[in-house]
Length: 235
Ligand code: FPP
Image (cartoon, rainbow, N blue to C red; front, side, top):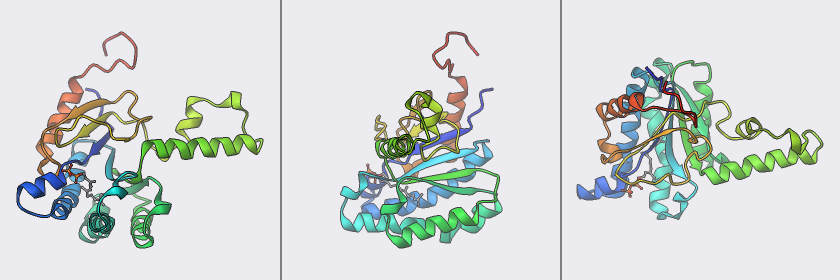
């Protein structure tokens, strides 16, 4: 059976879910944060080793101040509620995105969680925050250009691996399965380099409605797909 090591999820639909229930959008985000725990546990039990979740994009700053402020407080809520359990289960918190632009308190909560769990060897729970794939690639290109300028690297020496190693995801394997909830069929600037050969699943359920059963169904579907990586032979 094909191994599904790395699952990435675009957790869409919190706002619509809450509105449909007559609640403010932020209530959807809180239930969404609780669902991070549920789905991380389920992913771990299904054998996933890396779970990358899109918590806040470089474009999400355009939302109202109230919503942005609320989203910036969610990591503190998540870890206050569930860090003990994450540690007990051997989860390692990892981060991608430009953390430098986050409010100081948010950055500290995230870095502390990553530090506290750094010796764990179980599921890597990777939080993409102030993350945008184009911005990540821009930062990677800048760091490579700086090496060339410093005479540490020749342009001819730039391989695909040079780029992979300059991305925030340098320590993780490519994404095997990308899931987007809530019916939208877009990638929204998420892991563009890393999903080159990923299978894509768009499910109608919103993120608060996305259950371990739906995740299991997505992974089951993935195992039946024929991934050829540009080749022709069946596995
Ligand atoms: C998109 O749904 C969701 C977000 C921009 C936020 C996602 C954040 C969480 C689920 C909380 C997770 C927290 C941590 C710290 C990992 P939307 O609100 O844009 O939905 P809509 O399309 O219905 O408006």
